[in-house]
Length: 463
Image 1: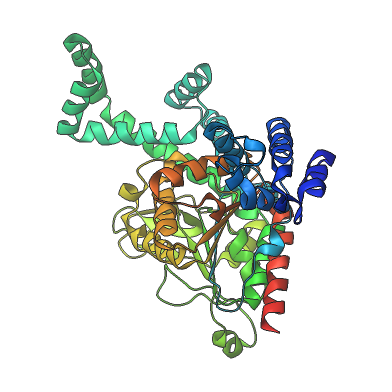
Image 2: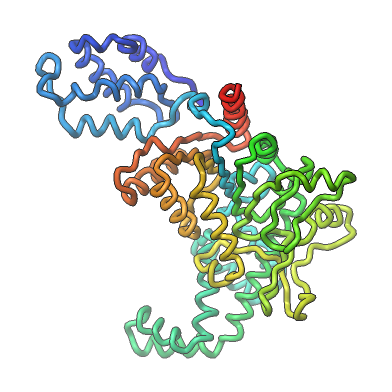
């Protein structure tokens, strides 16, 4: 993070400590602060001391007892408050104090796996269309051309449109209602929807192919290795039992980091707990399992379209077999229970997740319960995208119910925290925006400092 400027240092030096007890200095402080904040570069953090000076003395800005009789407009006061609200803060890590009773929950998005060379959501569609062209099917070629000509880059839009189309052509009532809502001209309606109905099988086949392509695309993640973010979380989880990890990522990086560290996972899919293969199995069974919840599925989970059965396979065996070319990645297979078609359980980024995978509802409820118990919710590389409004609602409810909960957002997007603060202020009465802390850095850099400082604060508290 960038250091503070000389201008900020000068304001703190001139007006810090007890200097503003002489209220005659306040007009000079207000003016210098206003000018500084109005011209401050976006990436310059705020020293908490400067914020404390303002918070402890801003009452003089609009009161009748203001020094020299100067009264500042509410607009100017609100503007300064908003500057502070939307700024990064310097050295916030030492202020985060935890002990053995502190409940920590990590929420990982695509940005947490980006250092492992896994594409983020905004890069998935171009790669999907690139692979679609290699199949050599005319309908896929037309779709790729359509998206490229219109510069459509959001994979959520594509998969959602394919799902709606497939659902509509199979349901006559929905089809009729879509005619009413989308088409005003009867002739256009009839022509368009006759074409849609006559091509129902093609639409269904195309949608199914897109899902398969998405599974194939996600399978490229199988060789990805854990990065510094995953390793730091594992180090922290080893010494802090009240810790849960929730991820929207399909890759096995977080799982592998946990298993390679000699720890076991609490299992939400198979009936038996999933153990790594070690000599001292009895000792391993005595360990508390790490609570890892994969909300959108995993590359080592299989889902049957017919019986909705879900099966988890040994991740490390799958990865090693694939890397040694002993086994290809199973993009499709047969369900052992019912003989139906089975494929990797990978929830694509579209707005109808719950309709496609009802088997995951219990998993999502478990994630909700863990988030609501958190004292600190550490959000890493997660963008709160429109396709995941249900996660945003879970977090908003948690922040509303748990008044002492704080959220630390690790994300390179400088605007994300400001958006979240505005959203929660609108949804939660009396919401204190300082409960959201921003670390505007890459996750592998930020997590080293954050978790090591948290561990150090825990050690000092417990001495």
